[in-house]
Image (cartoon, rainbow, N blue to C red; front, side, top):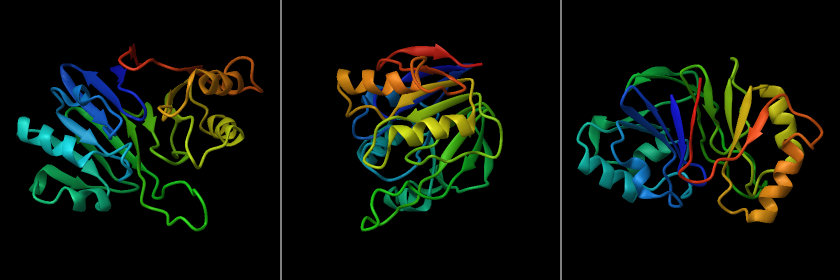
Length: 213
């Protein structure tokens, strides 16, 4: 399948003419949803979920379906059975992609900030998008979409996370708030000059695509 990055946390997967989009949020180019057959949403934060964009896409494509957690599903009230509530341990086929759901909660930002639900998606038993959490699936991961910068993250935790998941390749996501200096700093720790992770670390520019095996 082909992976295209659309900025920050959103990616689009294409296979055999079908398109699956994950986390089209408020920082996402709306073109990410053009021709989409299905959408997966990890959680309700604005940088992962745009109600307006999804309602507009659903109106434009009557066959579009959305899989997400119960909190996001409530905000898409009125779309009926086109919105499917899912959670940790579920598995389903969507637009020809095999999807497994892992995880339950968003990473802790601060004890005084209430946690919200967050689910991660493993696609075709190969590519994992954890949303805003460092969830470790109980199954091998070939390609990890790594959230490299957030209010809850620390580079040391990212290093340990990549070591535990042990993918072949880790692609940076959740990097929309990083400038060039921050991007270089993170790469210095997760790339070949860092303390060592069992994966090739790569960062795609918005709009860039790569083949995923």
